[in-house]
Image (cartoon, rainbow, N blue to C red; front, side, top):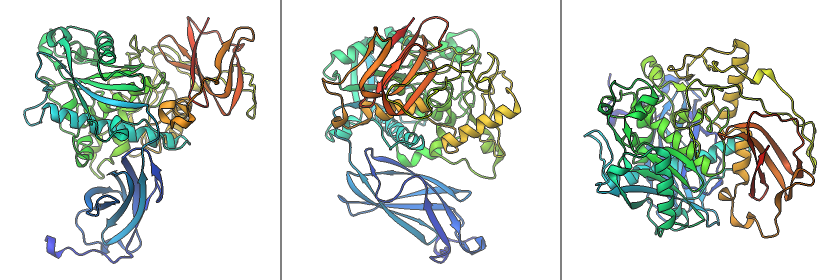
Length: 563
């Protein structure tokens, strides 16, 4: 018998229980788009449930509007993930599943700071501002701004959630509109660069040009970082002799392609913007969209997954990665600042159950420690990161507990290194995570792979996306992630003392990284209580030049070249 809408009856009020696992009632957030994760359990027999659709309903009441906002979210294998857009002040949230409800309160107030990020949509001279998209998609300037705004909010939320999972408080950057509600959600910037000239420029040239132009405009300020998208990016496979089969070939036939971040600007092309959601309720369906990209007409930037959902996950994850560079993060050997950003779909969505076709096409990518090809969408300020060499393992501190002055000693753990043609593979029963099928790499060893992958799942709360410890520590103390009352003063000291060959700090050093000239983190140290002095007389013999990046507990950052 098929139940009609009027025939549907809920189970008894005690048939289920609803548990939110990542957040608790009374929590205060500094960002408005909140991720809720949890599970629904059965107290009685499952046959008692008569609803044919497994949906979780969320009703939101704010202190400013007593009318509820109602949204519905899928429940998969008794788990759910949902997004709530919070209003300033108190937000009363009611979750309901099949007659069972749970209620809690969340508070949203932006931090007290002037440091903020501005989403920008750049329209070149003699361009109409419409981004490349299928005929079925709205590609107007307004639609672009809506997609960029929501994408920025998702990244804002993701950064905070991943800091919490790393053991810190939920912290993230503020968007201009958080601090000034009358400002645009996304600024439309009309550039003086002609569209035809822009389409002939390389990514680094575009980054340098728009960085100067934005800073010299009325928007330019030292307390702002720009998250910018270029409207005139155009995928044109007819511009090369053969149909693109690799990522490099795809980039070669894309005009005005850019994915670069550093300093005060993260800049991206818009060739895959049509795969992004413009409304909250579209986020999960678009991330799970398994429709194939027509690569004859549109850019397939999905890390070889070939789907619209893959493009959405990879390109939005790339934005998170490059924005991380503007917050002084380097490239890590795993996690978001490596290739972990490809798995962003698992952060916000649950793959459908009992459907091998859907799960196979929704499969995700585990970041290999070493890759044969340059990292896709993972580029530093000046050059593409190429990690086709062995990565040194982090050195261990010999001090067993924090000290005000710490001595460092190098050590080597062969279980954390790999050859230039190896990659780690994650494979569990559900096959949620796999390495890139375009990589001709073999597993290091079964035992090492199992140990490493278990560690990654633990770090990432099961979604394969996480900050490494040094990246999380740096963000936790970064001035763009904290209120201004914690910012530095003129009396703070963080400098290199040549007489002692040490970095000294008046506020306590919390993290130090040694990076090579491509920005890859070779070694890292974290000090939970902060140390006053960091001697540089370590047994470190890197090939070529390298940089030590040090941050103190109030967000001052020092970068010093090591010879």
